[in-house]
Image: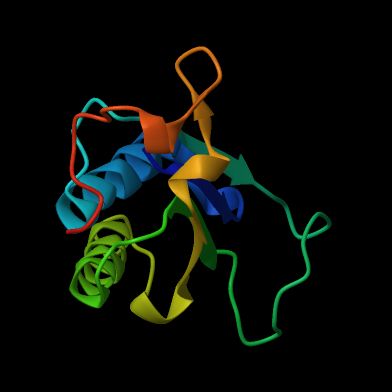
Amino acid sequence: MPSTRISTGTWAEACGQEVLEAVQAALVEGLKIPEGDRDVVLDIHGPDRRIIRATRSDMFTRVEVTLFAGRSLDAKRRLYAALVRNLAALGVPETEVKTVLIEVPPENWGLKGGVPASELDLGFVIRV
């Protein structure tokens, strides 16, 4: 049940839906979430709306994933690799992808009418 925000440059204006689907596919592959579990947002910024290293290009893409704590290092590695591979298929160099995971305990997510996620059957395993 991750919530994901992609921040990138104007190159993505021509293929926004493809970027969203590439990241969603990486989440499914890496974290083993159900395909229908979707909460991905794409933010596109021109050069006057973000500051990045001088060595970065407009293709620089940051993927921030807020997720339940508990995924294994192997799951995180799968996610990182899938993100780089899927974005590379859209022309993003592997050195232009930055992934940040923000792990939150399930009791800090209110879902399904305001119930803590720790008290719900989520329909998938967190510890993968």
